[in-house]
Length: 291
Image 1 (cartoon, rainbow, N blue to C red):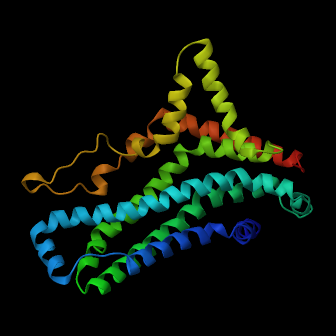
Image 2 (image 1 turned 135 degrees about the vertical axis):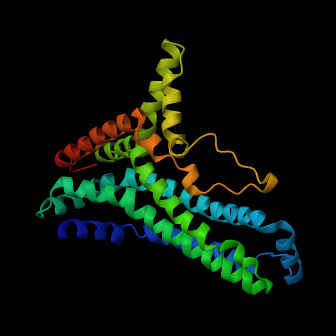
């Protein structure tokens, strides 16, 4: 257990972008709130909140928190892909893999420590960064406008739902995207150069071959659904709501569909494919020492 913890700490030492990137994104958001053009006076803000009512104010809260979360989630997705493609390849490229093989550490522990960082540690870092950024932005905007405008970003009930939403999306994302994660790890352990091309070209070749020889698009639809369908499959759909006639905003508990997600065959087939790719990455790690 101590060895695994040290391996995870090593990833944070060698990949400072894990925490530097979300810190920079959050800092830019706070600076934008601090020096941006906030055209809301105290009187106008209070009148607007009175006119819109509680439901519209809740909607503003939800949209604000989702916008902040979406920025961090997009950055997280891009960085996680880069990290997975580079983590095993970089060890072979700089030959540090030889040093770590001389230590009493198994290749399985090394691969799983990188998997843990990509799937759990990095998303949690971005979750904390998103929370801190939203709180600071609410404080800054409140001070600038001398009003309660910052309260739009601070509602304890909706805030708690956002935390559960983040954790739910992380948990379901781990299962749904495991075949993609496993494939990227496998490529990182196998490719000698141009890891991005090695990761992208095989799926493109499969889609092109299917189109040329059969005229169908099954592989294209499969890859599309796996890339874009994670969040969609984890929630009830279609997701519709209306504020007319005093209707309340749906809560996270009404939108989430964990039973439907966990009972989906697509999820567990993907888990099996991802596990096979991860096992292949472990075997390649044992055999390859150079890039």
